[in-house]
Amino acid sequence: MPGPKKLDPSSSPRALLGAELRHRREAAGLSQEDLGAPLFVSGSFIGQLEAGTRRMQADQAQRLDEALGSEGFFVRNCAALKQSKYPDHFAEAAEAERQATTIKEYAPLLIPGLLQTEAYARAVFRAYQPTATEDVIDELVAARLERAQLLADPTTPLLWVVLDEAVLRRRVGGAALMTEALRHVAELGNQHRIIVQVMPFSAGAHAALDGGMKLMSFPDAPPLAYVDGLGMGRLQDDPSAVARYHLTYDLLVAGALSPESSLALIRSVAEDGFYEDQHL
Image 1 (cartoon, helix red, strand yellow):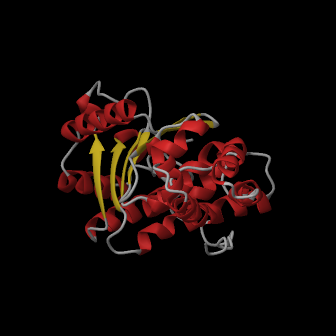
Image 2 (cartoon, helix red, strand yellow):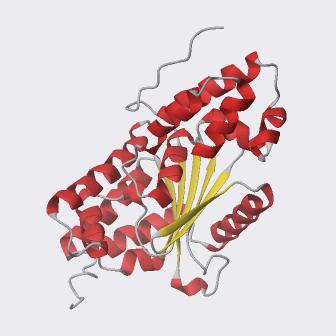
């Protein structure tokens, strides 16, 4: 059997570890369900580990080494997965984002991270951490802009975003900053790089009043849903829960403005002096 692949932390260690897991499982003649049993997880969870869409935990690594006779390989290399630029509650979702072919997101309060300009991201992080040093803020902004490089590919992932109208109306930073931020979103829509819709205030109550969500689909693993709150987040893989979030998103899309009308509204808010008229 070929020797273990060397993990390069600078190049998606989770994906490399997943590839090694698949190689060793198949060499052992085990199905994903067979390997999931001693870990007390489903076969689909093993598939997500192999696809790099889920993070391997230390206790899982130990059980995998025992089940596959891999002499501590997964325990040793699992530490590479802890090297993340993101908060613990979001690190797993950020890795999954990199593997996704489709991302659908509802944003109730802020422009989503993948669509933020540098100035907008800086204003958001400064509001989150008013006493942080500039070096800390710089690192956070750099990590967010690095995430946005996903959109450098002209087609993948497909990004479909529903913005609550509050996202457009909330002044983050100064007037010029907000104008730039919304122009950036509109330009991505005009270039057909993203699909963007706005949930207008006039829609009243809707299916996602409780908060935002991110839905991710993958070519070789089951879909995931990510929901977050203040300083916390949860990645959902239960099929019934994920299906429920997809239904919620479908209801949002049905109640939102069309992509054409949404882009018109975003451009209008950016250009009509709305932010200049606000007094803080």
